[in-house]
Image (cartoon, rainbow over all chains, first blue to last red):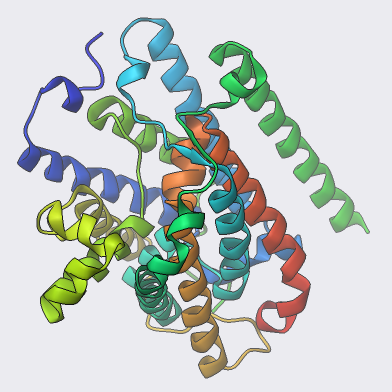
Length: 195
Length: 176
């Protein structure tokens, strides 16, 4: 096991910040090339006229997921040293619902708003200002929210844990589901174009 | 502002599967090099913590949420803030090379500039709040936790897409 490098002490904290910038540059380029710095293109998902967001996101998830499981299987990547976002069921369910409203009203997500702003779109700048205000509002409301914020903790809890299946099997299921979703989107677009 | 290809317009966007695979490789690279994924909304929490600490340090120390950020050191010297700086650089460079830099307010054909900007602030506010509650956004939860098969991340992702589809009809005037 030689990966991941940073937890194994391969380089220091200052160098990790350089890695952060390089990672962000790659992230920003991918989002911009996909057109996701455009709020109209992002919002078009939810009116059934452009499915770039869903295609990009699920392709990215499947690519990274298959890479992680393949490298772990080969013994190159220590999966236990990769930090999986912990699960808090209710806060993440409610957070997802509120986030969904914000996404269709705002037309960009936090990451894509940075790309929009960098390309000169002022709606991206406005969205970032809103993000900062919303984060501040959360912090100020935290004394009232703390109990709910910590509710239903599940720790490191993955779909393989939930389903009682090996990680590779779940990765296979997710890959097939993504492919089925892509085929369905294509069929929908063809029927919409014909109709 | 047009979306997609048009005569004399900026070059068309990349194939979404190619761009998605590129994004997935960036994410895989972060897993392999750093041992964690990518993010975006976390940077706004870092900036807010730094701002409150600079303006009202006693208030920041009295807030259990902000105190954790401030006590961890300078909130601006954090991985996520540098990564978001990278997003700005990468987004700017990519748009410049594609001839897609322009000052404008992107909006639907029926929406006014001021309405659109107000909606962007409101939507951003909701996502800023929600991503703190969920401990991440489309990057830190949906992409990162999605690829690592975290249950909470998949709940977050399904909830946000279902809600956005359900609410879209109510804000149709903004986009169509």
